[in-house]
Image (tube, rainbow, N blue to C red; front, side, top):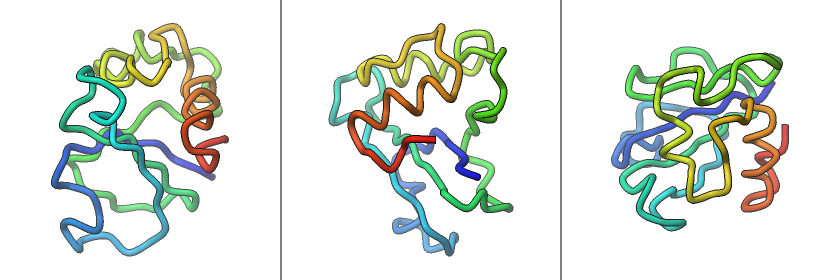
Length: 105
């Protein structure tokens, strides 16, 4: 199952060498200033043991928790991608898939 994370710049797997697995990411700074210095990263295999600096978004099967109600500020970092605070992670992933299709849940 796909998992989604907010990852600070400099903490991507290719930059640290600490993570072995498949991942895809979007540089949030390339879409505006709201998420500058961060990436949204997706692992298609639900990898365990990710670095503590990776901030997980709520699970995609959680149809109740919105990004705003999650209280981590992820909605603000993702704002320039068209993701809203009222989106669940599933809805956010669908919006991010308009940028990079592999983000579709």
